[in-house]
Picture 1 (cartoon, helix red, strand yellow):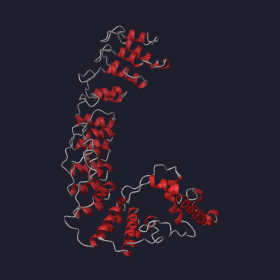
Picture 2 (cartoon, rainbow, N blue to C red):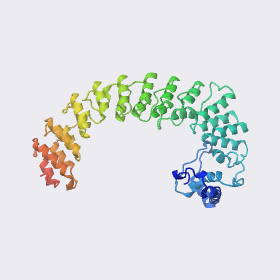
Picture 3 (cartoon, one colour):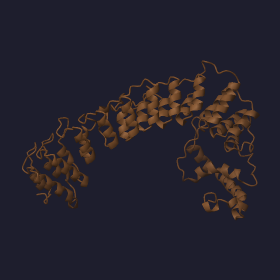
Picture 4 (cartoon, rainbow, N blue to C red):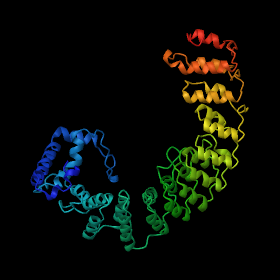
Length: 476
């Protein structure tokens, strides 16, 4: 509380009561935590809730209930211990002869509080320290104990969790000092994956130059999971330099996600323009490569609404006809200026359908200027029917007005033989009467332009009959 209050930022320099008693307070809280954890019922709860299936991984299970006092005590008692005055004697706390509290306190940077019970215990502490990125403590422990080469590799793997490139390089220095890494060495996959995921291009360059493969086989990359490679991870985050390093060393662009999107797809979708440029210039990727849904990088760039990425892809030769379905004005204008066909059908029909369905008159007019056909045969249903097919808002009324200005057939029919009038009446089924204002405006607009209230659909029901049956008496 004291540290978080801006008004007390200089509290340490002032004579506050907290500064006098805080060491004792932490001492008391630490004792309370230990007393609580010593209870049989609490220990049973901890054993059942926080069981570690594979102790070799040194992974701590997530806390299932962060409001439970046990989760706080487990996480915070060591913190309170480190701030206690005087420091309590905790030498008798460990109940196992081959384990101690050394890894816990070493992970907090307090490696001198408890002595490790041998080399195995010291290694556990060192791995914990490395995962926290505490470089100085790692160096102190490495100089104090004689760890094997394999153990040092384990420490390096743990350091990847910290994201400290300085520490990772320092550990690699220790390993290289023990001798040349064999050409047939099986590199731990976590090294290149973490370097890519965190954008550590310097470390990536170093291990790749030492012989680490760019595309290691790993258990987690299979047909039932995310099959992404290191270069995909780097592209996802926009780490252009790391992508370039991986591609320089021969990384394959073919590894994809479950939806078969490769690094170029992902970089385009995430609007990482420089990364897209690097992939295009330093790999042999097909610029129009389709994903499972037949989405090209250009389509995904338009979906992300990134003008710069769209412009780059078009300049590099992407097919503009693959991405005309989404309403981003700058992107659409670029596509049309580069020869995109405004009548080509996309996942939801031709672009005019999207513009009408979303009430985007600006997009609609731009497409018309580019010779889009409002009566195209690829439309699944007439645009007038689309414009009244859901509950109308002002944008819907404006779009209906715009369509009527084009003198389209107000008595056109969709695949079921329904006219715009019939569709409008049926779209308001079970709606409360106070929502009929927009419907009545649309009805009047259609009738004023010659809509036939007696024209039946394929089931021989007319708009007038539907209005009576649905008790929409204002419409009648």
